[in-house]
Image (cartoon, rainbow, N blue to C red; front, side, top):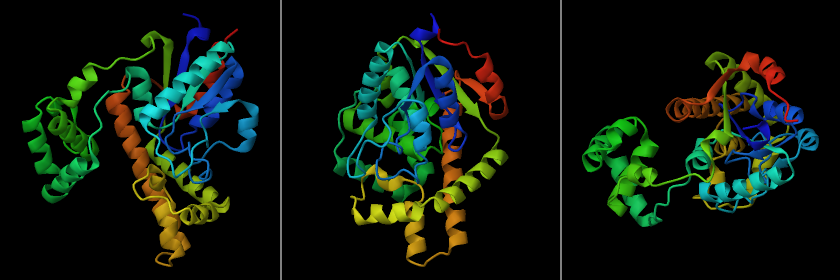
Length: 306
């Protein structure tokens, strides 16, 4: 298969330089970039989500960035549908689609297909969450593997989010989450993917996160957050999860000072980067790892599309 038939995927922890690398690669191979980050879809949150700068958007055609309102719900299923349309559109132009972002679920949906689990009512899901909150993760996990033994080898005992999801799926559908997975298929040939994972050492990433936090605040993150609060977005919408929003609220309410604000945003970003790395270890073991300090040399060796 030639490069023209490929779909390039670029992932890595937050602040690892994914977007810059994607732009450089797109220039070399005549590609266009598709967003695979669940927070960079929001048009009202450009700074806090570290969306590519206007100059970068001029250099290379970008898709699925800043196109949804923070007041809208946008699921992995919605993204997959939009991403497939963009991939087809880019290929029709004889260009190469390059998907870049840090949302592991988006990549999993693209590679493996999306699980067709029936919608579970919110009232039912909340009951499971209350149970988890009451008994704690340790006991909850033990109950989960009794309910669904398939989870023992598939879900880490400390993975709260996946434990709750597996429990509610089994309880509601009487079928294991992993049985649902096994009946799921991708629209793409697995050979069509080139999967690249940027590997960044923890200490270097901590420095980059701190620098980026300072840049965001300097570039107007507080003003952006103020505009967001005025929109009175419903609490259950995912845009509320954008890192920095709750911390800036604390700062504006004078509960913390500017130094504490920077530290809190940096800490939360580091925690997010750690979760991304945990996901990558479990779900992206077959991706090609590229060390951060070899990105330039990797780019030079990458074949041109023509």
